[in-house]
Length: 418
Length: 116
Ligand SMILES: Cc1cc2nc3c(=O)[nH]c(=O)nc-3n(C[C@H](O)[C@H](O)[C@H](O)COP(=O)(O)OP(=O)(O)OC[C@H]3O[C@@H](n4cnc5c(N)ncnc54)[C@H](O)[C@@H]3O)c2cc1C
Ligand code: SF4
Image (cartoon, rainbow over all chains, first blue to last red):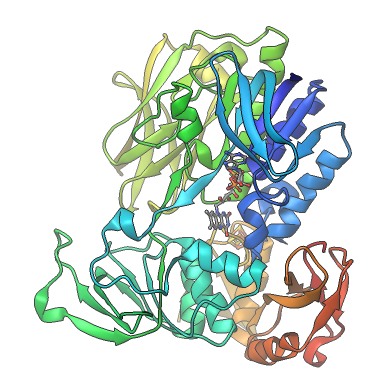
């Protein structure tokens, strides 16, 4: 059987960064398994620019960003297998995978990193009503078709959901000569970054219709149109507002879900708030020697933070293999009013260098608010921002010395008015 | 009269406020100097980096991704797209290889953003 110190499942930015960091920390026998034809993950299809400002202080496109990491991997003895799909891992950390070239494989790993990314919610997930014609795609599928496979999915488009991928595809399809009739967003605010609304919709006069949804898809063989409607405060379509828009394509940009079949089959519990495994400060899961990073843990809006998290898990792996990873946590994190989730879910202080970054999302739009961390009634730290939006992940750093002065227990994060 | 805009130079998307100051503008709310440069340029002559694809022969995929190496005037976007539609590259291609030199007379090159 093949034997490795570390097997990384998924060769996107999270997995690449985890492997590189583990290597830098002295781990030598590393294997990355990737089901696609090449490394780089979802970034290979994200050809727009704006990546890497935090990591590289430069503005890169998705493929350029992943290439930086692929090149780092090439400079090491890290091995990679593409076209290889991981099926499951056993309790003894035997990784079972198949590839067209090598067939079925079993690989023994001392440590495993999960970096399988996420997938998009589909038409089924949101129970979109109406006919079932061709021409309904997730925005990411359309992105792959246009940017990698060289196909144009349609000419007249309505987009449902204002997630970043949908916004970016509104611009991309406009560039390629399509007419984007509208972007309908169920919520009264957008789920995309403000910058994407400005440069993808406003620049091309594409209307963003907040508090709107598609109530019906029309068309037999191919999409012929949709009926859209305004929704009331309970998200119920208002019948008087029904309006038909003719189009041949519907793109869905209605959210991402961490890809955790392998995690769940391994018996690792998934946090219902993040849909990813519960992790500690170095992204250790509840299964010893198994780590997770990137979109498999929680959906990130910027890849820079994915790479950061990948590096944390790489550090964790190195510590674990040296037998230096402390396992009993000092703190657990909890979210109350206004916060949707907090990652990591536990913190062990002895594994922390100088600070812990807590990633979290707020539940709705907050102006003139502040995010605070409490233990019991004691205020530990706070984070100010001009505005908190559900679309923009909050990263909240707390110094080790502050945490070291606390009793073990729960740290709670809250959004409060100022 | 103060003007509000969102900086689009990086994903942070700072909310900027501009106030006329002599010939130019004073900019507030930017977390870095690039925001100031962007805001003033956006008022005078808006520019964008264009990212797209061109056809490639014998690559792993039928198209490869490309970008303008610097922002180009916004009104030229569709002319640049027109130029890109007639390009056919031949693999092998390295990231950074020039696809179109001095596109639309802007002085800016279009370069490949991946290997093929
Ligand atoms: C369609 C789409 C578009 C996006 N666009 C942007 C954007 O423009 N900007 C941005 O900052 N972020 C974007 N994101 C978010 C983006 O996912 C993250 O920024 C980042 O790419 C996540 O990195 P990752 O390594 O966690 O996941 P991914 O990049 O998704 O990588 C996961 C990898 O794991 C592989 N994999 C999964 N399961 C298996 C298995 N069983 N066996 C082997 N390999 C497996 C996948 O093939 C994939 O290559 C987008 C996400 C999606 C889904
Ligand atoms: S001002 Fe600087 S930090 Fe803020 S969005 Fe613009 S480029 Fe980014």
